[in-house]
Length: 190
Ligand SMILES: Cc1cc2nc3c(=O)[nH]c(=O)nc-3n(C[C@H](O)[C@H](O)[C@H](O)COP(=O)(O)O)c2cc1C
Image 1 (cartoon, rainbow, N blue to C red):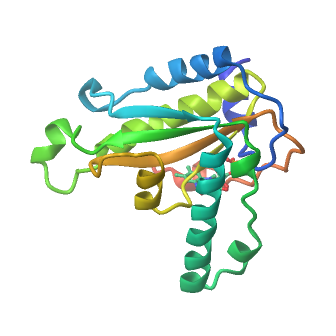
Image 2: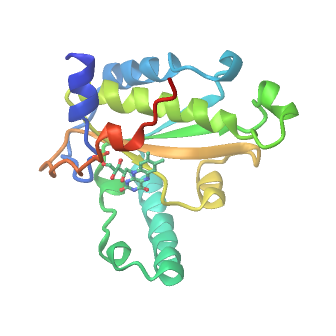
């Protein structure tokens, strides 16, 4: 698949079919992840591949609690309607774990901490695009309490669960959410 087609056609999937994803495909997605750029090539990521149903259920429970808190605090009506059954239905969830110690030069530059998250974000986008290129749906998911996920996945406090990437064969597709034109978002300083 052409790169621009993959970029434009990739969509967030919240509706997965119960078909397993082969180890070979998971390995390819992880291979795409590790070729992402990172600050000083510090590769601040680790991955946990979750197919265990009990762990997926636990994540779903914790995210449901997180959603409730968010609804109470924000009053956003859409969040009350938002269903997260995909956390259980997705055949695979890959947790992308950032290492907050991997800051490199940014440790010495106040206000620029947290660049390990940028590296993880680049890895995540590679995962989503490679999954799409291989015919899989994916979702970049962040609606969770970090400490709850740390506990469920047995992580040290310095490890940051940056995102959960849900993967699987997509069910019904939703229309692409619109984008503002690039021109509206761009200033040229010539
Ligand atoms: C950092 C980040 C966090 C996101 N968190 C969630 C999430 O918790 N739940 C969810 O359903 N979608 C989440 N998304 C997906 C966005 O909602 C989605 O990318 C956006 O609506 C545009 O739709 P598209 O991906 O289909 O183009 C997240 C995306 C990003 C980049």
